[in-house]
Amino acid sequence: MVDVRSSVGSDFVRLMHLPLPFCVLAFATLGAAFSERVYLDRLGLTYLGILLALCLGAYSLDELHGRPYHTRFEDRTLWCMAIVGISGATLVALYLMWAVSFLIVIPAAVAAFFVFAYNLELFGGRFHNAGWFGVSWGGLTTFASYFVQATGVSLAPLIVSVMSSLVGMSIVYLTHKFRPDELSKKLQVARTPSLEAYSRYSRKTAWVIAKMECYAMIALAVGMIIPRIL
Image 1 (cartoon, rainbow, N blue to C red):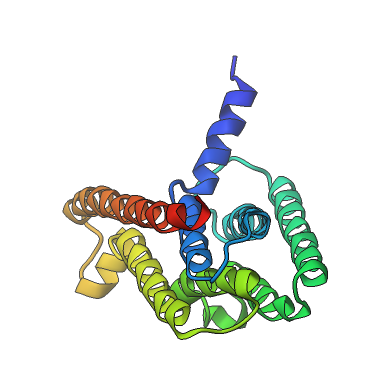
Image 2 (image 1 turned 90 degrees about the vertical axis):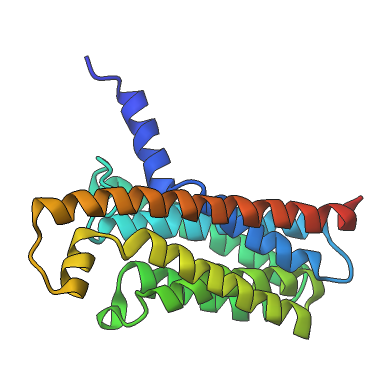
């Protein structure tokens, strides 16, 4: 007998594509660490908004478009998770706009745009690439988190946002460019058993490197935020 709860749990873990969500939270933590004062309630709400919109919502939409994570969720279930995630994140943004600053609508609206444009490959897939992934998941997350704390703009967090964008881009290159179809197209060769075997080996190695990048960002974020909150 198939354990339904176990299969649903494993599919959900696969959908979350760990540890990438923790890396995005690290980007948000870095942004907050550069503010003059760190408000833990605002940071907690920022985390919640990220987990709801960029993880639950965006990943569910991504899975609907081509099944890249190979889960067994029905389309209806994925749509429900996407709606719950994006609706919850919208409520978080509305509360922050009311409690902190109406200007938070700007990064929130940009983030919402990328959730749909990137994951549903709108506009002919123009925004579904490594560059825009890095900007939206890395740079925008870092800067938006700073903005929620400081309600202003400063040079240092902007520079750090560039770093976050580059890290996000590198993760996409590591996790996508060694796929058989990518290699076959790049090398202009047929998909042979040897190419498939090389692709499997390369993707495993690249994923290890990507996870190391994620853990490095998490360690950096923790190290940056601890002196600010103690």
